[in-house]
Image (tube, rainbow, N blue to C red; front, top):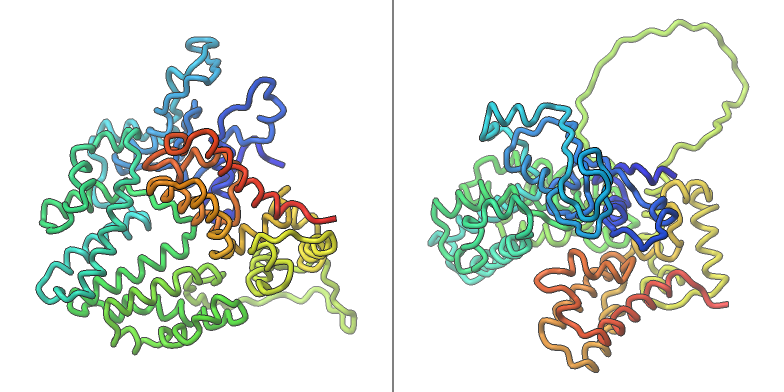
Length: 491
């Protein structure tokens, strides 16, 4: 099924799963059969440049021009991680244990470019969405230092922005070469009080040095782009309304598209606000706190818009020569063109209250009949078994529903409540469990208990540093039971 070489781009539903499979440590010998199931080559576009560590990478292939020196070193940093248990065979040292070096295949002359232009091309790099969001948050926080914004509500919003930026700075991996290179610039901002008064020097450091290194683990790219649009609006308003109408145009279009998505329960809940924000007049009269309310309520809905591209009209004048005419015969279509994934997503989101989906999101076991009905819907009603396998491989039906729908908040809280209370956890341990709860609530389950040793659970402390073996086992058992509850059914 093409697992040896895997394309990994942000538009793929299972991009993060493919990354996890790619960076999973080698299984114990004999391991040939297990390794055959995992990607050995990852072809990535802007998904593995920064913030993702794969210690056993032995080869980097550059097949693009990189003009930013910071990004170039971040990309090279993917190969610099130590991997002491890696078995290596190469033409330089033969066979040995423990990674001693890695190879770079540069097909686009990046090294030659940086020898000629040591600092790269300044100001011509396209800014990533997460970099733009971080930069705009900092710029808004600077604007809110003014006397006109000293009221309690504005300062509470400024504090919220600063805390978000500080979390992302604290999340920078100190083991990455790119982070070590700018450690002196980063270190002062690990103290949140450094944001109390943002001067020109601090702003330059935050927006030019730190912003390009920021990694946001949020997998909802459409939501992040919406955040970026809203922050653009805020800056336009804070700058005296300049370009306000231009900045609001995209947001108006998005709200107008959302109006067509009625029937999705999450969209229906926000429909009054969607109608308000679909008018340019709303944005002209709103303030930055209104913008923030809209951002929080609508950002998670943008993913339901399947086509937000603006097209320019292309006028053509073509004439076709008629070579054959046949009338009265029905036109038979062999294939129905549709998006199977979109239909599955829409079905699950619009049928959350049905018994099967309700049980899966509330961690209740399915009967054999209910599990069979779910299989029928996914492999007969919405498509075929081949459609399912092509899009979701061997993912169990219940886990797919969980992944798309998430888990009920109160249910997940209740599952872990006894563990928190009975084990008398301290605050750091409770914080770790809360991260687990938030992850399961959003993603439906944790794939393997081993995932708890990786991001986003390994900072500021790893699980084995926080819990003794007995508590780790109890936590693993809870997580495993929750996952198995979606994979099995009652006889």
